[in-house]
Image 1 (tube, rainbow, N blue to C red):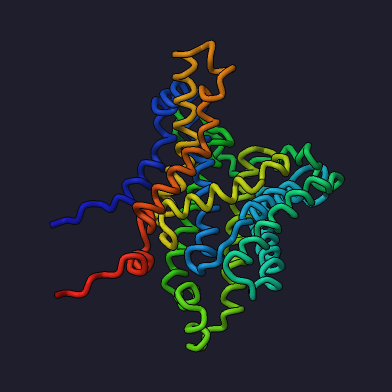
Image 2 (image 1 turned 60 degrees about the vertical axis):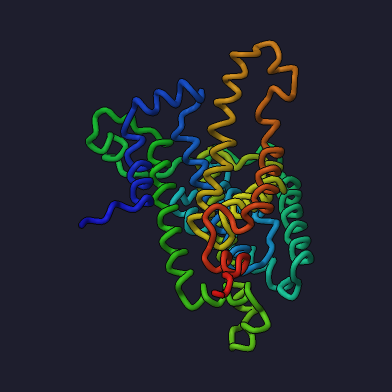
Length: 359
């Protein structure tokens, strides 16, 4: 008897084939007012960002509240390396390699002097680092453009035959179209890489530190080096997400975009999805970003039809003002009724719900 295809393969197939079906895009354009393709690309980017934070918080148990700083470093490194105002102009593919390395180095610089801190103290330092990076980017006007940001960031270079439609006549090729596939391919690559790391010696060392750092050190694990590698890996993935985000926007966006709210939103993704669970992190990111980028525009357009005179004057009639209330309520409910997350890691689930011994 043949096994039914895994839901993961079904979802991947749907994501691959979706842009090739113009009628779905037309429906999304009519309902959302914006192409669903762009919204999905944003969700993919934040999935990569959440996976990076999950390495630090979920795998290693280190509370990191400054992931937005490395996201910003990746975005601004992309701007400096690609815009015409600077001599580098190495293009998207070059920035895709260099910017995550720069973010990883920044992660090492942050982690090296702070690894002795634990719990709330480490969280406060990383939170402060995020604000320092944001203010620094804002004040380095001659380098970062300050509130004006760096732009235009060029789209990814692709071969000419891909621009001509890949032989599919009914598909309209645009930079957003192939950026969608590039981002999806990078997300799948990151998932495969993290799955391999999770089963490796390094991944097991991260989890050992999360469960009991003293016991891990007694077993011969170099805790300093292991935690440093977790910070570097998380920062590199955040920098990678920053490259894709800046390329999608064609600008670095102004520094205040990368504030503490981004760090908290990504933390909510991994708590709701499941700490240490790769599928759970993806589900958490899709749920929160789907609400923010897809469901909110739908509700807004519906309110504009029902209450055309109240939407602009009444703050309660703007669903975008509800986002933090919804995120906070979801977080409280999850911590109360399902603290292990929607799709929990087996290890975390056993820690939170110890199996009862047979009578």
